[in-house]
Length: 229
Length: 165
Image: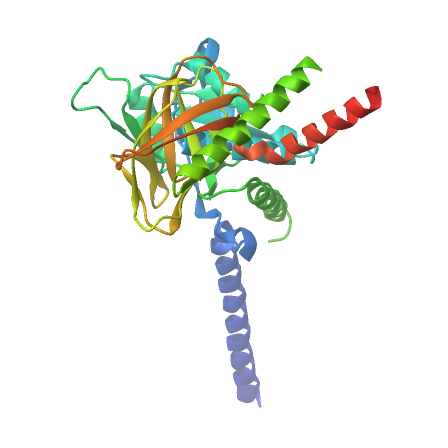
């Protein structure tokens, strides 16, 4: 009788152990999966698989105002790399981004959270002052910056936005060279992480609509983190 | 009223110019325009469609304008998301077809404007073809992304004028 009772207890314990292990494994799996919670299908393609932490950088805008990683924190930043001697793709993308801001202005709860940054990868021809004039034509809230080749190389590399300046081989002093650049509009989240991207061809309705969905998804996720997992 | 007449005159002139160029050749220029750009920008882009109704292919070899020092035929090419520009020596318009120059692809690169250009300004241009043919027409500066807004503004203006009468 007592032996039977013992057996009964032992198997009971085993079952409890299996249940306990399963729960632990499930919690572990849930926790380890948390950073890559699956985004809704309609925004999935615009997000990086995992948000990428950026390291500090120093770029320069008009009136010697610097732009560093801290200036990206607390806001959603739309970042575009280009140059003003680019007559086709750059004004087109900047106009699209300007229209995106006009659309997002109609959502007053979110509009103050966004900023638009144009980074010139042609510091030889584009001065910070000329960039201010350039960007404000598309939206008076846009920020225009550039920097030393070292800074631009390092920042564009972290943003996965490589560029190449094609010096005029026949005449090094010539003013007519072109620059190959990434025409994606990048999205940096309020923690200063590379979070999403809008590849070409873009249109303002698409960027604004997707951004609002990303914004909702992002906030729901941060709220979940502090509540039940 | 003087301004109105001047605009009307410019419009009629524009029509006549386009009409004349369309009459004497198999080539037609459709919707020529210059992308408006911020002040201080040295390089602009122009877009248009070239239609070749003839039996022979036509080859565009040069573009000129009294408003710019130099004009090149360019093409923006995307490799993945990387955009770069290619200079083209010539542009072939096959017979019985048309080639469209539009944002993000083929364009005329306008270098060193002789004076700043604003939305609405006319830009006279001449296309030169390999067979010696030349076509002159007038492109208009406009903001490619703001067409809807512009049209609305025009409508508002005419309504306003009517009220004044």
